[in-house]
Length: 95
Image (cartoon, rainbow, N blue to C red; front, side, top):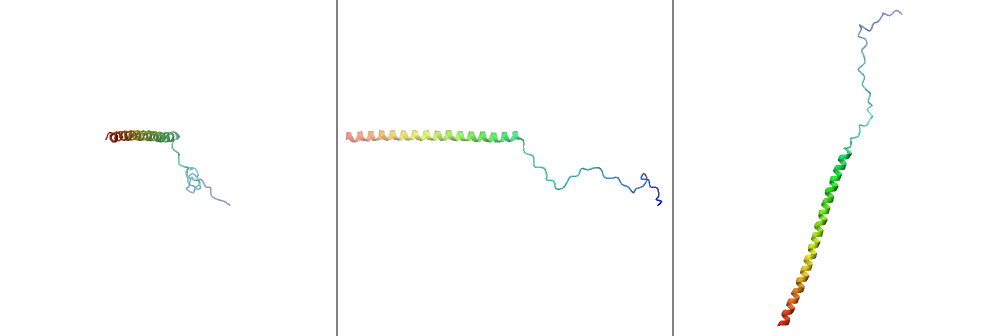
């Protein structure tokens, strides 16, 4: 069979392939989200712990102050009651 000589330099029968692009399969899962910096987490939780500790320490001091005040008021009431009883007893004896 005699076929004509074919030269690709001048014909348009052959188109070059598209530029190479890497093949990415569609079944791949997206990358997991990046976690924040470990140092930033330490600072955040450290600050929260410091504020919480300071709050609890302040509350403890306030409760101790209230307890001391309650004891002081109780002692004052008992002493004044005793004095009142002594004064009224003296007044009854002097009559």
